[in-house]
Image 1 (cartoon, rainbow, N blue to C red):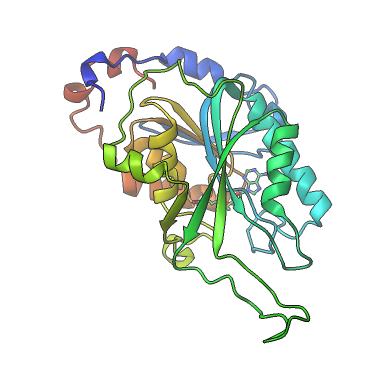
Image 2: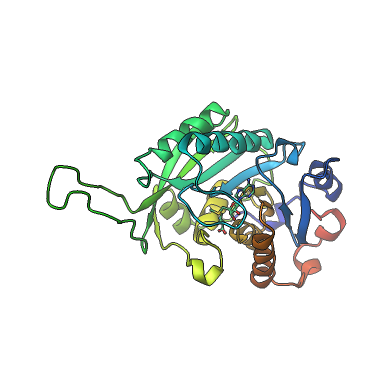
Amino acid sequence: MSKRKNEKLIYKKSDLENELKESSTGFRTEVLRHKNLILFEGNSLNENLFDKEFIDLIVTSPPYNVGIEYKSNDDTLNYEQYLDFSHKWISNCFKWSKTQARFLLNIPLDKNKGGQKSVGADLTLIAQKAGWKYHSTIIWNEGNISRRTAWGSWLSAAAPFVIAPVELIIVLYKDEWKKTHGTKISDISKEEFMEWTNGVWTFNGESKKKIGHPAPFPRELPKRAIKLFSFVKDIVFDPFAGSGTTLIEAQINDRVGIGVELDKHYCNLAINRIIKETGTLEFNCEQYYPKRTANGIF
Ligand SMILES: C[S@@+](CC[C@H](N)C(=O)[O-])C[C@H]1O[C@@H](n2cnc3c(N)ncnc32)[C@H](O)[C@@H]1O
């Protein structure tokens, strides 16, 4: 880990507020500003949500369009509509990203409900059409999930079903892969770096019941993404914030977290969870971050 004494805060309060200034047409509502986090209730399909390039790293899991019962989002689009939806928000994120931004996109490998589809391959192509450059793919081996729903033709080659109990995390970037901007401070340990640069990640999925959201990802996913692919104090964005998992890990790992969530109910869930997991006090703030109050992010 690089030394704290070299740390420089790169965003001034006024800069970030400018970058995220409320658009005149009121497309979004700030529902939480807590420590280094902001959560907006809003729609990531709306290209006017932000009018500046502010993102260093996107970590997100969009709706998978597999009939999950979200409160506000229709998860039963036909496949063409789903690809249009994907192109729209992925293009918006491109527009809001800085030149060295990275984009970690957690999506299914494929889909077999309502006809087999190569979701991973199709969204990778769509992201590239939106301008993102491809870097690599991480396979998330979700230990505790069984995706098996049917065998197809049991013990027969007539029409067997094959299903891989994994998800993908596609790694993309905007213009340049090498990061030369930001604090240049990395906080990853040798063991973490060695383990996480192996592109098969094995950890359990999150319990929907425990979190109270129909499709949360586990904290381990944004934690690894943030520590491996961003510098301390970078701006981490989740356009589908859900229960706030990415924002929690952004705060805990000393990044700035910005999230957008469509549904008021999930916004409230995220607010409660974020406050519970990150604490309410700026404890010893002055002692550990002497410059923060004067030149700080918020
Ligand atoms: C797969 S979940 C994300 C879960 C999140 N990673 C977590 O750990 O809780 C997708 C979320 O996107 C939200 N959503 C769907 N459409 C949206 C849109 N157009 N703009 C913003 N949020 C949207 C849904 O309400 C849902 O909470």
